[in-house]
Image (cartoon, rainbow, N blue to C red; front, top):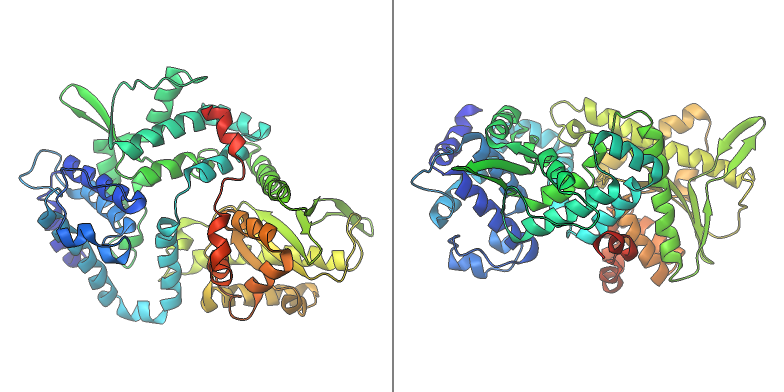
Length: 499
């Protein structure tokens, strides 16, 4: 595939690296937040005036790939050209688009035969960028999770910062890089309750020397059908450390990666710490409960936590949360498991994805087994009424489970497990399952408060929308109300660190 890459490489070799990375930052800010382009970026008038979205012809995920390729190939020393020129920017971007098209043609048979899995890859690449970034909601979610005492202790032991210090510095750093692409060192941040050493530690932890980052970007590329989807080292180290003469600086070409790094990315820093798995699962389950109690303040909902029950002498645990109103009941199971990256980009070899779908099917079987016990009268804290029941698996990360191909893979696994365990297959139709991310769940519950359980969930599980992603289904069913569900459920949590 190197022959396909050569034209783009030739274009990249003539671009000066640092000025071009600053252009990536400027475009990101324009596409993400509608900010005016910095004066040093030349933009064709038709593109400048075009509406945000497809009219621009430039997408955030393309810019992220360009940043990776610039770091891998572009010269550090000043070159005669860089991406500040509209011609150079458009030539480089079109070179990437042409490469993407050429890869599709080279692997046309594979892409055609596995088109639905290619759609799954596209979803994981693009949907995250398409979601409107809510710094307050995203930071609050992880502040509350990692701020749980057991996790906070693990965080301090393995990351070197408490949750409060991490998110105080993180918010300040994000605020700076959302306004400027670079930060001179040493920094002059002065933050209440956070030492200068802690600020420096944060910046060191999430930065990498330019030469080392270039080496990693060159090494991570996959010259095959996965080229566009290959892991970007900027995800792990979103801050680029370099010097101009004797002056040290940090650059953040993609601020969203920085925010991602100190929110959901912290998971990977402490994943292997002793006691992490149990503490993380408990903290995540508690967070979902906090969401339920927060929305129930706006409209009365009955919220029941997990409870023990017995089947014979066997002690079992109920579903994590039961939420009800006069119209219906939600059986909510919380799952913090992340989808492996190799599963997200699988195409030629689907084994990694198949293993992950096995786990997702296990989650589904678990909630149906406990629902069966509940209906059989075995729960000690709940008894069945005539209200409809809607099982929901809430994942911390968005697994992007939608469409016939992926849903069929999961459904086949669930049905096989039902047969092996003697479960009633009719439950799958009587109680259709919803799988969603916690970010979607937060907005769904805000909508439940406006409407009611039955109205919202019936709209999601009807034949038209059953295989849709939750946010797509709710936006389609409730277009007027859905926009009003975007608010921070826990403003007091941010106020505790921002004042």
